[in-house]
Length: 626
Ligand code: M6R
Image (cartoon, rainbow, N blue to C red; front, side, top):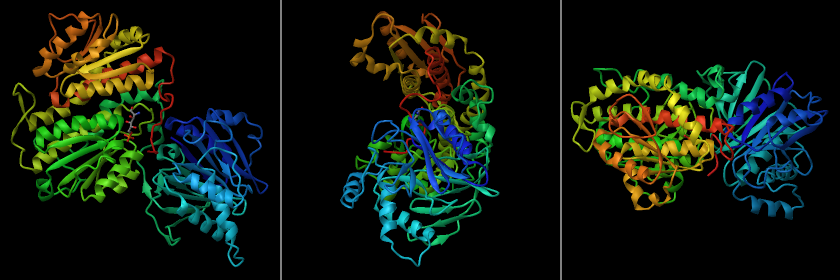
């Protein structure tokens, strides 16, 4: 989704703005633009296409300004074009604005401004913002006030008129070397360093410059110069804000010799899940969550858990459901955030709602969280990004600590989320007094003790390494499969949740149509699509379901399908085209291993097709609009 960058300091702003935009490219965009000030006049360079195109626009080299704003646009209102790209001017070219979010009442505001003599050159919702600022600024005909005071008031009044979501930056020749920012329901951070300050949509974009950040909250404004940052609330009262020191270093957000971020992030998984486990889980000790103060009294009262998320985070939630139900015996439902919000879920103070979001900025997830809070539930956020919006809204937060995830296709965030669900479920089980119980893990009545489950969790990094050292068969399959148009992913039980994640990964970066089904459901319709040569990928890790799953695979082989099986079961006596063997582990946490060959498969297929793995078409890393 749209990305925002701002700089004010002593250096030339143009290259800093461009570097910032390049660092935000992973969010997904279709146009880019920058604005700086030259001789008291705002210069805007913008166009559809890549950030690098700005370097070739007339006048780029001549931009001497030491402050400015910049933007990558992910089109919502109006197709990608120069006119629709940001920054946008007001009619008098006194204010330039970049915006991330959606102004839901832009039609009304446009009509109101038109009645007041304003005209519009773009189809965007954003263009109303600079004109509204102009409107309020012009109305404030108060000569006793300085321009900076008047403009701040105008920005504040304008934002009060906006319905929807926004993170904005405003510059004007009337207030040199100053950027005004404001936000509601869209991310915005301010990085600070000696004699220079920065603005961005997310933290990794600024890590080469600083590790010190202020996180702007909803309905807050800030006035930023090179030496000062002043924070204001809605009523324009000033206040102090806490600075956050971010531990991630810049190299964590670089490719470090890998061809793509996605590949790097896949290979980081042994380490990222080690970080997720951290000191939370040790053998022969109860789990320890320093960052989660949930009491036994509260938890014993919880009679329902909702896990709410989008995309891959929702798939991690599907595994979380199994873990929480098996270990804690609390009924758990998983919901897609964009649906949850509108389906009037039955929630009260006995409901715990867990929100999972790598970025912590997903608009649907944040909105759903706010809804459940309003209905009286306690909310727990699972996020990867320290201080992200969701963590600021939730009652409790636990972090995955997976390190920055840059590729649009989520990989290490998923495995860390699942690991965290496993450790959290053990922690809850211990709080609830189930610490010494045997946990039933499958339909054959197989059981595991919590101690053995802990051992299995701690064995995961080594087992992941083992998978990552043996990628040849996956590559061979990818060399054939990249020519195909349709793929099916099948699994039963927990393997079905992995089928869904494998299918999502493949479609988003290879653009191959794929479907995931519970293996047993295939013959109730989709089997009609199975024909000679079609690829069917099955995940098979639960011994109690193996026989049934194998029968389902036989059914597609009989109809001509080419099969790949990801398994830790003994398949002797069965003929499949490709078998990817993965190490054995308790079925409750097998997704952490079985997903990895599917991530690699999607990656190799995308490479074979010559696609941009890290920045697939139409997708954005943080989906900050509903
Ligand atoms: O940042 P979030 O975890 O909230 O993001 C949720 C989804 O948008 C995300 O997982 C998306 O599905 C990924 N592109 C999947 O690879």
